[in-house]
Every structure is written in C-alpha cells, then in structure tokens.
Amino acid sequence: MRVVALMRIALVVPGGVDRSGRERVIPILLWLIERLARRHTVHAFVLRHHPEPCTYELLGATVHDLGRASGPTGLRSILQLRHLVRALRLAGPFDVIHGYWGVPAGLPAAMAGRWLRTPTVVTFCSGEFVCLPGYGLQCTWRGRLTVALAARLATRVHVTSQYMEGLAKAAGLRVDLVPLGVDTRTFRPRAAEPPAGPPWRLLHVATLNRVKDQPTLLRALARVVALRPGVHLDVVGEDTLGGAVQNLCAGLRLGHHVTFHGFQPTERLPAFYQRAHLLVVTSRHEAAGVVVLEAAASGLPAIGSAVGYIADWSPSAAYGVPAGDETALADGILTLLGDPARRERLAREAARRARAQDADWSATAMERLYNAGLPRR
Image 1 (tube, rainbow, N blue to C red):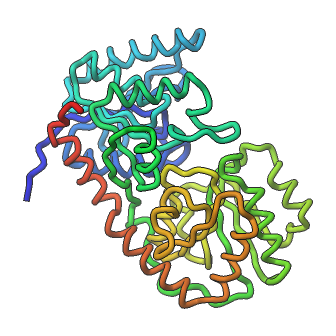
Image 2 (cartoon, helix red, strand yellow):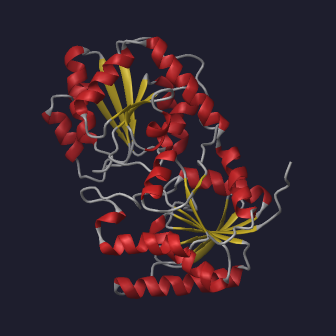
C-alpha cells in the first residue's frame, strides 16, 4: 500500500471557513480540511470574507483571511493576487496550492502557483461550465475567460461528480474526478424508515434562490397534494429572495402543506433527514449536490433534477427527472410514495455509495492527487 508523504498544503477559498465553524461555512470544505490537517500542515487563505485581515486556528488548520480589497473590480483583483502571493510566501513554502471554486479562488490560486513555481489544483464545483438565466460563468466573456485561464494555468483541474466531468469534457478539458464525501459521524443511518403516511414528509434542503428553483418544487407539490392531501414539505435553507417563495406558496394555497425552517446549522440537519420519506431536489444546476450525500448517508432516498449526484446515481440510487419539469417531478413523487420497496432499494444503494466515498475516503483520495507529483499537463 502506498504511503502518502506528509505535505504542506495551501487551500485558497472564497470563504466558508468562518472561525465559528457553524455559520457562514461550507461543511464539505470543513470536513476535508479537518481530515487533511490530521496528517499534514494545512493553511487556508480566504478571499472576500472579513473586512480586515485576520488569522485564526480552525480544525487543526491555520486560516489566513486576507480581508477585502477596495477599489474598482480590476484593481481589487490585482491587489488580492498580490496579497495572496505575499501571504503564501510568508507562510510557505508549500507542496501544493489548491484553489476551491473557479471564481473567485481558482484563478488567483493558479496564478500564484505559477508565480511561486508550486503545483496547483483548481476545483470547479459551481457554475463554471453552464449558462442559465442569471447564473453561470459561461454567460459572459469575463466568466468564460476566467474559467479558461484557471484551467490553463492550473496543474490539475478537479471536479466532484461525473455530471460535472461530462460538462468539463464538453468544454475540452481533462479533469480529475474525486467526489468529496460527507462526515458519516454526523449523518448516520436511521433505524427504520418513518411510518407510512399520511402524513407523508418531503424534505427540501437548499438556499432559496433562483438556481435551486423552488417554484418548480411548489408547483409539483400542488399537483401531488391534489391527489394525496396528506403530504407535508419541510423547506430548510436561507431565504435570499425576500419572501418570494413564501408568497408563491400562499398563492398556490399550500400554506398548510409547507413549513419554512430557514437556515439550520449542520448539526440540526440529521433530524430532518431522519423523519422524511423523500428528499426533493429542484436545482437547475448542481456541480455535485452535498445534500444528496447527506440524505443518502442518513438512509433517505432522493428524487429531483437530473443534475449533479442525482444525474450520476439515477436510476439505481436516485430518481432523476428533467430540471424544471414540475409534472415529471410530481409523477415521480407520487410513484415513490406508493412504492415502499422501490424507496427502500434507492435508499440502500445510495447509502452504500455515500459511505463508500465518505469524507475520510475523499481526504485520502485528495492526498494521493496532491502527492502524485502533479505533472504538468
């Protein structure tokens, strides 16, 4: 068995590593940092988070928040790159620089790596390869240029799902596929599925925004409750749309069928997964979809848009439907609610996959990617 050498790892991130460890965090990133820091020296360099620079310890890693540069967009980018290179030099040298997200972290990380002659990995895990109404880096020349430059300057480009790998290949890129798994200490299998409904409990975990497409979710729910009135939907996620989703819910006369719980910290999510019958995902795009993994590790099957992990896993471990298709989504929900054996098969296979590639597995896989010598493409 190959022994992974101890390394000095620099992670460049847009945020998600708040000193609280609970709010303003990206859990999948924290799980990776925590595990890498058990064996390696890990420094995280944060762009565009705190107004002023600061340094603190988190999960065994040292976090350097570079503060927010001021001035016009172009000048801010130049200043941030300059601050990043200086911080990397002061804390370094490093064996690898890893930029997490194409924008705003990927391109500065790749440029800094070239400047410092350090191998780099850039993770594309957002809208780098898509153009949707109001979303996606392929919608503007600046976004397309940023993605192209980051990919060209990076030593390796990393994605976390087969779905995203397909989009990258369509763009002419060769990528490394390493799924980033969840903490299975937090998300554990439930002893048994909740009692058969009614009430049937659906769960949606996502920020309320246009890409997550809650209108399709609510319109599908209206079709479902017309045939099965004993269905209730729990919506967990921060509202960024100023109550528009709640207003639509009221307009569809679904007030008695929906509860909006707002933002919930990670440690409160398992209770939602444990009591639900189905996770419903309606995103127009997902580079991966961590909530699908969290649900799977908890024994909860998922239905929804065939993007991210649902696209990867359908039909044997998830139920995929076309994004934005409220009729297909409603039909699928009704089918699964009426077929407990199929729900159980989906849940069992999803759990197997989530646990086979959990956060511990992912950290080891990323170590091997870092330690492979990262030859230039």
